[in-house]
Length: 413
Image 1: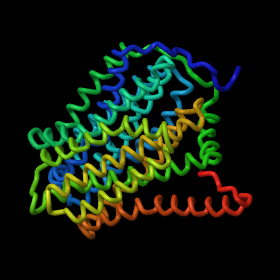
Image 2 (image 1 turned 90 degrees about the horizontal axis):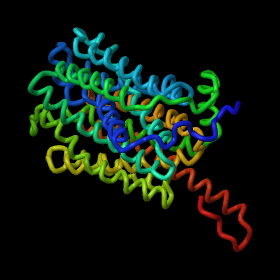
Image 3 (image 1 turned 120 degrees about the vertical axis):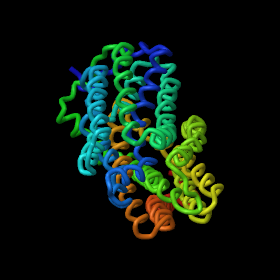
């Protein structure tokens, strides 16, 4: 038996209704990772801790998400996918209930971590959709499902801000548990039963991840870009509520949540960026996204006391993030089409680890140096991959220039 099946079993069995349900499923589940950000001041008051005491909470779901991606998401290549989706949704419901009833900061931290571990359904549904879609419609299907995920990320902060303001932060997680129960019932009926696409054992499946990291330099570069991107993104959203709660703004969580709607620019740009990455150099558009994000933090620092400055910074930040993220995905999926699920696992693990580190750095910077410190730390995080990229370009140009025959220009990398 071949370790990798040549033709996906079940390809072409995905209708528009099921595609839409999978997009909704991605949006509903990924929102679990982001509800907490506008709610941090309320959580701090309710649990009688300082702002610094809860600043690390947004990092825990991200770290847990990375662990779930690393150890559980690759199973989508070797087990029945619908059953795996149902199992993970069941675990998510338990974690959400734990968040809603946690009486102490310690138990809330444990529940947050477990919520991240179990909230990997979007990264199961995306490759599942690509697997089931007819070959000629695969791009459209994946784009639709990815769009649902992006909308879930954006609306999560708006919804949790309003729910937290009027019903309390615990109600948000109770509502999320109810939505997850409904989603479980619907997806269990809608998704077809499926078969594995690989004959690898679990140890060999996990072992192949390191082999891909070791042999694919483009994957390593995309992981570095993604890690920095998600790191500064979470650092920003983890501290924005604290900044806007202070003078001259004095905004509550419902207003902070509305800033998530500004990110619709990123959703609108995602499909355009994907087309640009397909037609040109996806590495270039990824770097351009990093530059836009760096510019966003300069604007957020300069315009820190103006609403217009914050809004402009959010637009640049979300646009830059989507440019880098979509370009990175286009780049890595082209490396090994037969192993896209595992390539996605490696990339998303690096992004989530970066998000966790970024959240911790953002909280530390806020507690020590305030908003200016957050902007500076985020700028430094983005400068690292940009300097690394510039250095690689210089080194490659020198190597190619030395090896090229006289009168022959080196080919672009």
